[in-house]
Length: 177
Image (cartoon, rainbow, N blue to C red; front, top):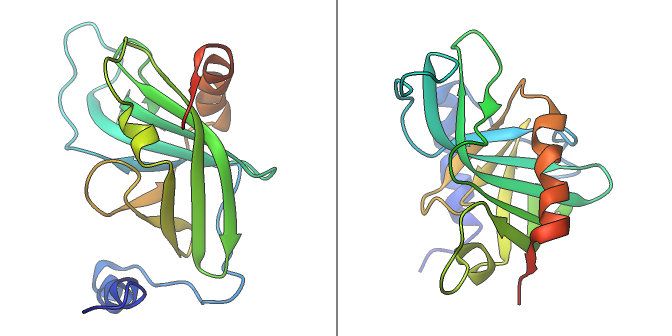
């Protein structure tokens, strides 16, 4: 049986082939107050009338310096040479919670969620309220809900773009658990 810690180590051995490197184990720095974006699918041509030349499903994490987590699952759009924007016209889900950083690990706990469209049944984000990430220099590696492990990389998206959705969760969201 593989020890869970050995899996990220194997990935660390492969990352130099992709031009990435693993961060040191002690007090690993990573970006706070800066959106981290993971594409959950390919960039696509947007429908007519949409600003920008591409759109993609994505997960955006914002780890605020005060320990608050804002996590958005939805669609982003924009031009290839500009920072991406979050599409409020498409369906999205947002979670608020807390995060803790220890060594090369980040643990997040979802506490409250909101979906732009009514949700029937159990909430998939609350079904997995605790999520674990590995720090890779200025990025995170993990599965925040897409079903596969991926890299959440820093983006030029303004933090205010993500923070806008936090108020909505505070007003309309429901607690996990």
